[in-house]
Image 1 (cartoon, rainbow, N blue to C red):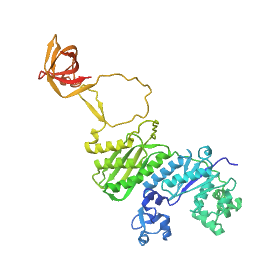
Image 2 (image 1 turned 90 degrees about the vertical axis):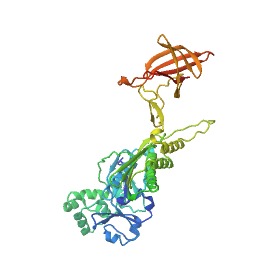
Image 3 (image 1 turned 45 degrees about the vertical axis):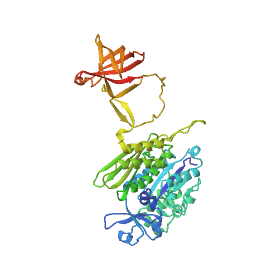
Image 4 (image 1 turned 60 degrees about the vertical axis):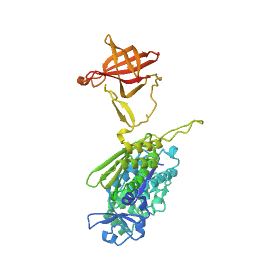
Length: 502
């Protein structure tokens, strides 16, 4: 008995399902997809609602226009490619060996599930989990399981819509395939015509034909067809490596100018991104929204909270505040969301620890502040590598991803309190060093003086080194000690107390 075990994921009417995946509000309406050059467009895919109204594949655009309730889409190869990648990524979560067998208008992939029982349980349980995951993506599909790859594929093509899951018991391949139509074999016109003249309409009838006589009349290809009908054709599995990219793209039906309408579309796309991230036990660390505008321009913004999150409402609020502060200057035609994955948050509070505010609330507060004062004015101050006084820049708040490998003990450091504006003073020198000075109506005698050095400018621009700085430790008449920084402008010969040391 064969030790192989395969699951086949099959989704028909794929062009229509790919376009409706990000349009859940249209799932209850009849929809068709047309392709071709006007005025010769024809229906290439449709959903069940449209089929119940009497619509069929191949109908012309004129015939489609006679149905007033129909929603018409133009076929989008980009949407089909994106949806195919999402489904392959979903299948790859159950097995690293996935083969893409998609055909025109149909998504089809085979999954090697041999050895996955300890992870996902029996094959039927895996099929239910896979089907539930696919339905969460907005795709209607069916799953078949068998030890012969081609038998599972043929059964998936021929099963009625009301049977979403079917497993072929070992040795019963021919029995399950017998009632299926020959259409599941993708016959050529000549082969289909020949078999129809012989009165062969099902796989069971084809499987009963004698092999030698069949080959003599139809050639060597007929041997493969007979093995397919009996569920005996071997298969060389050719796996592909699904690429995990958290990206969603949607072409809008009409240009959008209102922010509320845009956020409705973004909310559906975020649902898909969060669902795909959760399937891999991940969260969204950042989201980049790229808007293609009328006239050929683009508008791109990136939102990155302090911690990765799967909270949809948090992401919508952050994107809303950001787009409200930096709104696009034209109508929007295409929306693209690209997310960066990150580890999920792990917060454990002690039994008697006080409740702390959620990080998401701080992110929203910072976003509101950014909208008021500007993005470049919110963050943490970082000193720059220069001698210029008070030279710093603002960086966004970032939480370290992990603990440092080496923990250094805390060190006591002196704190500097800048005086703004600096206070003028008079200084007396003795032996080329400050000896006394006045500060806030008190006279101080210098006990220790460090300097001088020039604190303004950069080493490669010596002409700008124009501020002379001294660090002093002085004592007043009442015994109090003052540690301060004095600066002198040589051009003006003016002394100032610039900072105090605590």
